Length: 504
Image (tube, rainbow, N blue to C red; front, top):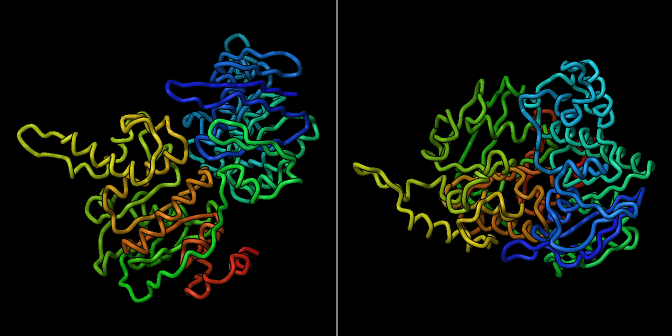
């Protein structure tokens, strides 16, 4: 048993956890839920030695642990799978999995790489990763990188395995493999602590649910004795639903952005196209790797295209780079990977919000300079409008919760005053409260500001709630287009059944 007894953690000016007591039992999958900033991540970091509690005890099998770093936790067979990718890009899959165990394979200063690769393959097989273990990680997709992290955690022979949003980059097929692995580990008596914002997953895989709010433990319930509505009430103290938001009626509006005949030798798709009108939310729905994101990245010039044309307000444009898409044509792209592509985590909120709109504050004189006062005023405007929770605008973006980081990532495109905005998985790893806010923001950009919006999502509820025309992607092809205000006014169940037909 893992016992947490009256755990309190205080940072300067902030009490992140307040006298939290909770037990985790052998052979149990225990879900930890709460909004971003509720204290979940802090608790996980205390369990694995990254943070030390201000007061309280961590007890494993009757022994009080004094963990000073993550290596101490690994020695006690405690391991974590982080939502963020923490791998060495230039190292092989096998090297990443066995990195902290290379001494086992070393003799007289030489590493037995065959043994390393065979050991890594054992854990790769456990997570269904069918790739040569000698391939460098930098060549792989986000989904594959997450599978490698899971394999690495399993390689520690963990007694306590923490999984922080482990399915955020996985397809449903890959998530099902992970859940099968978790069920097998459960039979072996391993304690699993599972953090997810996907309540369907929590209901499917967990035995017990513990909910946090504002650093306090709200309660613990057996999963079989609770439903999603009660969980949401515990998390945010109010009901949340994704009912039909209303009509956009953009059919008569002019086409803002259009792509035709887009082909990519890199991704292997050919002759794809789309158009989005002013005041419209166009949905791109499909599983990870279906071609949704790849089409957008190729269209915007982020990745090379082999053929195709793009048009803005009826005029053909040449998108040779994303910088050109932003600065010349005011096209914005909120990437799905905010950690690696969306933000400068070591820089301030103010810098991140203003980075795409520095032309507002740049003065070109004999000695060019930035009007910092105006830059700060601009940043504060969007911090206030998006309700970004931070001590001050000079706070580093990397210190914010996931939901607030996502708001900063969105704010920089609002600051750039883009007329066409693409949101790629805008609420992955974001709590329910922040998700609701981001949904309202996207809706109002189209409805009130008449922006042309493209929403890329693998969350069916999200795509149904917001889009009023939808392209279905499968195997690098657009297999269907669903449209019509009346169609989207139907129940979510009826729409999801229709969408599901294309994946059978």
